[in-house]
Length: 256
Image (tube, rainbow, N blue to C red):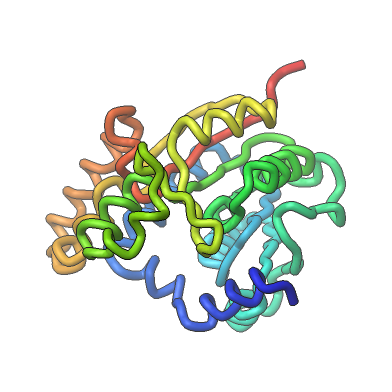
C-alpha cells in the first residue's frame, strides 16, 4: 500500500463520515445534494458513486430504486458500506483509474470524495475525464473550498501560526503533505475547461452551516426547517459560493 493510501486509510479508520452527515450541520449538505441530484435523475437511471466513502449516497439512491455502483479507494469505508448492505456493488479503485468500466456505462456520476484528496491538477483532471468517459448525462462534483478552510481552521480554531507557511500571498493553501486539498471557484472553472465539460449549475452544498455547527445542532425543528429553506433559496448565489465549505458543480458533456 502506498504511503498516501495508508494515511488515508488511517484517517478513515478514526473518522466517522456517517456521523458527520447525521448531525444537523451535516444534514444540510446531505439534504441539499440529494435534492439537486434528484432534480436531474430519471426513473431507472444508473448511478456510479465515485469515492463513495461509507455509502451514505450510494445506499440512499439504491433505496430510491436506482442501480448504483460504488467506487471506493480505502477499505475501512468499503467495510462500513458492505456491512450496511452486502448487496451493494463495490469496486475498490482510485477515481483516476476507472478502466474496468465501459464508455457511457452509467447515466449519472457522483464525485463527492476524490477532489478532496487528489492534490495535483493532473490527477483531478484525470478523475474528471474518467467520470466523463463512463457517464452519459450528468456528473456531480464536490470540492472543499479554500477560504472556508482558512477562516475556520486558521482563525476560528486558532491554527494560523501552525499553517502560515502553507499559505501563499493570496491565502491559498499549499500543503502537499495534507490529506485534504482545497479549491477556489477559479480552480474549478479551469478544470472544467480542461476536461471540456459544460457547467450546468453550481451550488453551495452547506453554505454557512459549517461555521454555525453549535448553533445549528441545537436548533429546534421549526427553526432548522427555516434555515434549510433559507439555504436552498440562496445556495446558488455567486457572492456566497466561495465561503461555503463544499461547492458542487453539475456538469455535462459539451454537444459535438
